[in-house]
Image (cartoon, rainbow, N blue to C red):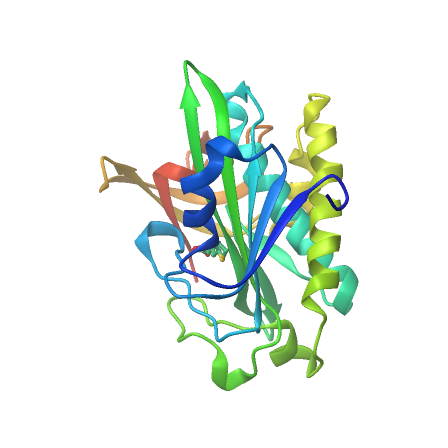
Length: 256
Ligand code: BTN
């Protein structure tokens, strides 16, 4: 047990999320699983998550909150906050979040992705019984090791600073930060305000494509003005109406 967390460390796994998901029933609340390399790392929207051995911080956290389901978004907010704070404090850089769960840095006006979060939750009767928060952060890859750009080019702490960082120190900070924010959430305090302060998305014009059953249903275009206590992005349309959008149901594009 370290800092209230039971930690399992591996040189290699298929995916820390998959390993934990298969064993979650027998593992306690606040179990963390870390791997130096993943052979089948998973990202959001069915994407792969790839990193050369020993370069990224790849960890999955098991929580058993028994919260109302709506609070599930708080875990994504808490994980993002803990990640952005850890990376910013360690490097002195201004690491931010792109709604809902990309860890990014803005350089010369261009957003670069440094990490992301994959939440896999189980619910029962309106309660969030279990959540696995997979966090992948690009730390020590050189520019040549970075995954190819999708819509947002990738970066790492090293590709930006030239320095190498101790991934275990970062893990300890991440777990401490997550634990602190989680304790506040247990006291019914939404991470809304701290999270909102780290979002690059706000004050920008965005197009949200609302998905229904995996297919695009309609678009909401407007100014991203804030988030509510449930982490929904508030978009003010040209008619002045505020539309709240839920992360799981949208793909978001910042308009240029
Ligand atoms: C994303 O940006 O699409 C989310 C990426 C999440 C990657 C992490 S790495 C640790 C954990 N194990 C996985 O297989 N995925 C998550």
